[in-house]
Length: 260
Image (tube, helix red, strand yellow):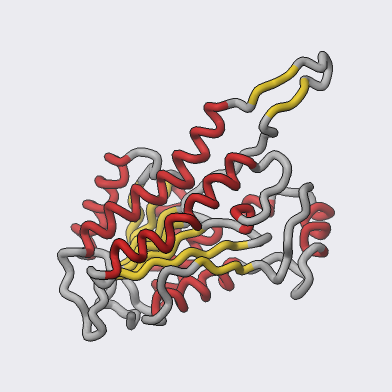
């Protein structure tokens, strides 16, 4: 797909980190970008900066997704690009003991359900809603109607202690990638997923510098945290390379996470 003002895009989680970097990169090519996020203040500021549109969207709510897409399409037309970056973390062991009493503790299921609902189901809500809209588009000279890029995590492959819900949510995204690509192939819609490793995002920015340095030292090469623009660069490649389809790709400096 050739990028330019004739193309519109939706980026979920576009108000920070990986999503923001991707939105900025697409906008730099003239793409009309709509940012979906729950952070209105930051989202509106970024949208104004890149000449895009902010849409307040909670991906855990199908009606919110539908309203956001309606707003984006009214302003920019039907999107040909969807980049899913919205997500949350959260840690707890499958079962454990109270530190003071030794009493057995179950996993807090509300936490598990929330992480799955936002990360996995939220991604799929946006996929099915956006893809349905893409069906109305005329295919380009290559027969392509649209491209979808999802965000998983290396935790989908080697989750650490306490990451069971997060890992399951991201593994689900990896698991659906090829299926969705096959489902949509006859309509000319490609689907790929990025598995980022340790990236310098606002989440890590809040951790102590010593912790950040320790994490960076675990990366074989280059020995640093990933830059958000490197994620955006891979997302752009997945969008513009017409033969890139049905794949999930690690972007992690060759790191393989240990149990803790």
